[in-house]
Image (cartoon, rainbow, N blue to C red; front, top):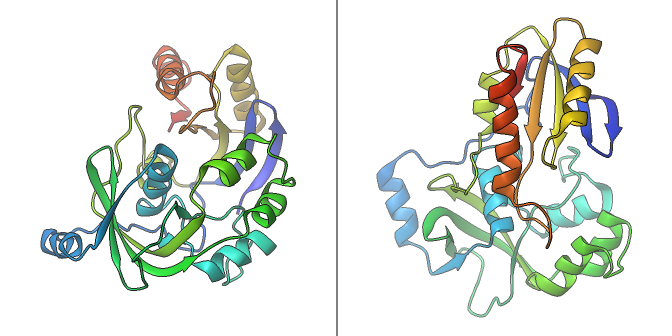
Length: 267
């Protein structure tokens, strides 16, 4: 679906026609629209989990379709398939497992419903279908190429995250809200005109002049194309620039350049 154009330390360029098809063929929307159904789901919950920021970002991506074709946190079968082969059981490519980690599973069983909350906001209900203890050393080596605790993500995986995973379908109650502005996949797709080639630039850093020069060059390389600027945000490492500040750099540049570069789209 995507053809990689270039990869640098600053970000990744990809190229497609229009928005491209959603991964798996359909953009998932897991938000429950019926108020009575949402109320019934919440009333059936046997416990509540207060999410951290990383988990809340995963819930956002699940309920809004950014992790299509997933409809919830991976069960043990899907988890093992992705860790071993980077593919879902249905053979669709999926690079990393999407899991909900917990420290204790005492009293939890299959069929239970769990209310997921993020900073007091009721964001989703999880239908528990799988409870398992992963081999995190294997996960680290397969996913990150090392089990060394000197790798910051491996350290977080092994030393900080819960020792059990809980999988199952997620019913969205409300899209998680963050300190920085976000867009859903559907909202981003709506900004991309049909029939035009799209060059996408994904980046996690505050944007600076060198980035912008890369954007201009990438857009010029594909005649009459749209340039999608797609910053990613979420939990940061100690000492990193805060996510709010990162996004503000993109917002500032968007306002400064929107008249001169109307072919740019900012997600």
